[in-house]
Length: 253
Ligand SMILES: [Zn+2]
Ligand SMILES: [Zn+2]
Image 1 (cartoon, rainbow, N blue to C red):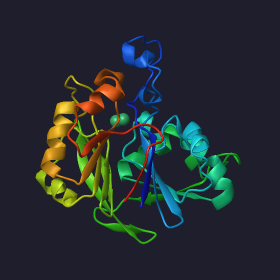
Image 2: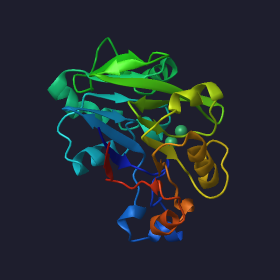
Image 3: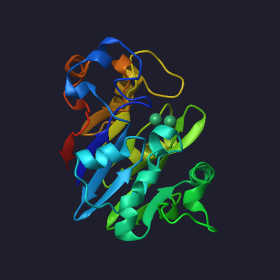
């Protein structure tokens, strides 16, 4: 299984528009972060988790020639605003399968009404095949996928476990019941926003405590803001099995 970090930044990315704080001015490529998303591949299939406003740029940068579907964690724009750019894949496949909770699909139907229209459809709109994520384990091309409900402040959202790899973004809290789905992980990818506390995201200290509790073989932090600090400096402070992700990073398990 191969994971490609398409983007590792928080909702506004790094650098942030009209912001001159030190990390936004950094020339280290690892301090430039597009909106968070991963591509997860096995055999000859690849799925995308979330499709934010930088999706087009991410597909071009990684030279992605085909995808097998998109799984959404939640409806926020930094995770969904690139949906129109699925169009080139719909030319290849007819319909791109998308997976989301019922609430997220309903939200997308309001915000992207032209994509889901059944009458007088604009011929240029992307064609998506809607799939509701089941409550429990499901299978995608031979890999078991476990949806995990996490709390993004007061909003329940989804995380996904693919085999022994879990991708969790925008987490603030998680129930003990859902934590049970995270035992024996090879790789845990989880959000670590910044140093200061935040009402809807884990900060660095909380993310480290979460990793300690879940105890995966390796952990990678993502959904990072410029207020976490410079990549190179923060990474030096982390335990030996914990890393900051960066755009373009690929890991294999
Ligand atoms: Zn987000
Ligand atoms: Zn969010």
